[in-house]
Length: 503
Ligand code: HEM
Image (tube, rainbow, N blue to C red; front, side, top):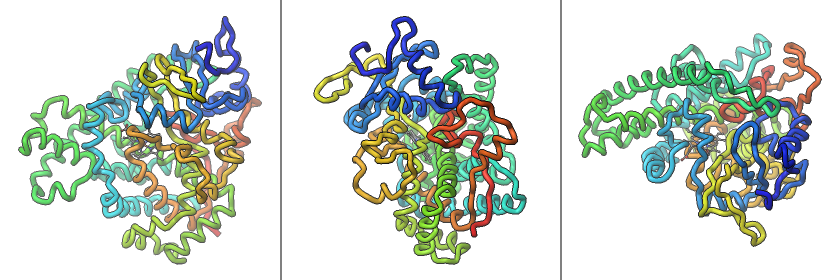
């Protein structure tokens, strides 16, 4: 470790002092990727660096801050996931989750679930589902314009994405946007029970009740989903002839696998062995969690940044007028009739990409191994015994890759100037995000339905006045809407906003 690039090291205190020096310049509750990007800039570190995390944990971290190195550990070879990831989200997704497993077990499951994200299924079935839920979302925003109240956009966007994912995964209407739902409440609580991060207080996670509650929530979710699985299995019998062709929901893909394992015979799911049920339930939980959490945060930042950049908002609206016509209320019907129109939105797509560059909702942590060193300028460095973290936030904030990296400039994604592997909010290589096309589709549909109807304006000043703010640093890159770690990277304070009718 001594021969590798790193922030200043103290023989007694390791990296605490040099990390603390940077941490005190930013809010204490920022997402760790923000701290890493600040360390990278402050000490002028290069394509990678290492640091130890003592006294927070015993991990030695190798930060990848460069696209070519990311290719070496995630694409040319693909390191396995790090056990720290399992520690942090197993209570939500279960140990058999596609996100957490490796090797043949992972490959088999990836093959089972890939068809759920085919472009024909996305365009022919899921686009319509997203439009229906998007209409309810716009109805909610509309009501908020009448009351003029301050709302947390993250809550409203999460209810939307939960409703969408319920239909993608279980073909089930959760109605989270209009009512309470037991499964959704359990998910919310599980996410809240995830370990948090505070750069100034390593003891935030020592609450002994936390793991007990998390275990209890997981048990209740499992029981709920087992019942759903049994009911769905019973319904398969009713439409056996068309079943395979039409049913690409995650739950059906799992059940088809069960039938395949039994030589094509639908053996009652209640008699299925535990390993099948575990695999099915853990992956249903995985898709519900991964499929709503990251998308809702990104939707929040899209509207937040567009309201701060009226020129960009005007360009988005112009594009939507051109593609869907000037009658705003007709857009939903047009998407349903011709979902392929959504592929004609280069500027809106550039906006989404720029938002994901500035506010990436997730990243990958891998376990270094003896067979996967990294090579920089002809020199080889080991990854073995390191927690290897591809910090796409840090890559995204490099001025040599993205000029004026802290500015919101969607136009940069309309040119070919960005290095091929630099933009990686969905990660790349075999462990990339299986739901990325669904996420992009959902975000495009929601912008089309809402951007011409509403101005959604961040209200951090107003909220600060209500809850009171101390003297500690309150902004990151001059902005109060920084990301925090709550299972994934979420907007601070749930993103307080005012919603107005677009002028
Ligand atoms: C803006 C939205 C999204 C972002 C930024 C995002 C980002 C990511 C990232 C960075 C990974 C790699 C994680 C790791 O290596 O630990 C990942 C994996 C994954 N994502 Fe997404 N995701 C999004 C939406 C979705 C959606 C909509 C779904 C499902 C419906 C989904 C399901 C998954 C799954 C199951 C994996 C694990 C894939 C595997 O290991 O084979 N994600 N995502």
